Image (cartoon, rainbow, N blue to C red; front, side):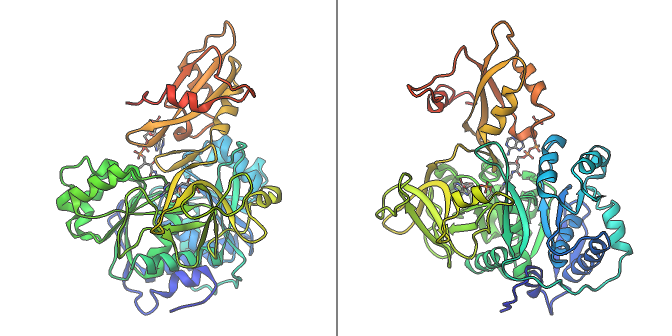
Length: 507
Ligand code: MCA
Ligand code: AMP
């Protein structure tokens, strides 16, 4: 086993001696890319980054389509000792402005189609250079890669050096950059590879976006670290996935993937030879787990993670994968349940806040020492904000969220961010944003609005007013107007009452 510290070297180690094995089959182009070809491009890409002035510790920000070139950029950034900072492709220019200003990247890579608009944004944020990667694998960065020399000696990095920053929405409406070290990412990928029995024989169906932990670190790092192959799809498509299943072994997805796949008649036959189905990022309904088992004979393996911690718990590979639970703490991860008021550990079986400690935990929030101190204890435990309990068999159950968070189709949405934008509209006095059950997305966003007297805006006016400020997936799928928001005696908006009132709007 390879025990180096450098994430890029760890990701390459398994394929050394087996360089002609296929790393990636590109759904768009049909091309098969060997490990040798992939890492040759990574090395050239690293030269191109250095030629652009990227130095160790510099951030490389990217909002680009899911492509092989973007994966190369990820590994090349880490190889060059820099810090990879991927951004959701749904973010608007207004949202990108915040990230670039906060993270101060050396370069920003975007879709050529957005180059004009985003170059102006990047310039205002003080970014030195803007490069592009397009959905067709072209763009100015791939051009520079192809012109660069081959071979690249990894820039030495220690286990505590940063490999990536991933922004995660915040309760105050301001996103926080989670600083992820070489140790955190490499150790978690190694643990998952072993826990889920990944090997060079595996073929993973990769249909998740690569700007979040699930698609980038869980799916991609584990594939690379095991020397496995992946079928690289630009986005989720149920029919395409069913078509690939007979020649694949593993699928990783958010619960919406499984809900949608269950609608297909061909599922049972397609899934017959699969080895493993993994779900995470949001709660998988026990009903979905049970139906999947009945139709395919497979028990979906549910696991639990966060941007700040990578993966914390997993149902067992061998053993009972229990519906409605997220399994056991992964090897090396400690998980305790604490009293939300005092922070003291609670007796086994009681419900409280989940806290985790281990090599997987992040190094803190970028440029936010106060936030870091609030959530990361001196003793190394990270306060997740999730509410849970451990049952008598040791299985962890997530029973709710202490934080005011909506998870829609695996994307996290903080109501405060939406409320701030809606409240800013001239016709609005105040708003409350809630998540309610949705068959496809698990939860979906509803905005409840109190309008100015006499203004009487329509739902359409609100949608038009926020359209350019918020990514589409964050925008309310239902808008309701009230004369006043329900409040308790302390004056606090009673979101529970609103959730109850609008519980069935999508049914
Ligand atoms: C798309 N739309 C959504 C979502 N996705 N609305 C709410 N929630 C969503 N998740 C909207 C679009 O803006 C668009 O709206 C309409 O739905 C159709 O868009 P389309 O792109 O066609 O959607 P889709 O392809 O059907 O996408 C649904 C999806 C996708 C496949 C569920 O959202 C997805 O891949 N989700 C995975 C997210 C993920 O990777 N999360 C991991 C985070 P309009 O028509 O109005 O324009 S990492 C994490 O959470 C932790 C660490 C962990 O444990 O993994
Ligand atoms: P993120 O902001 O992407 O880091 O989302 C992390 C959050 O997703 C966690 O704090 C949980 O609330 C939620 N989450 C991830 N996996 C699961 C799961 N299997 N079950 C329930 N919630 C989950």
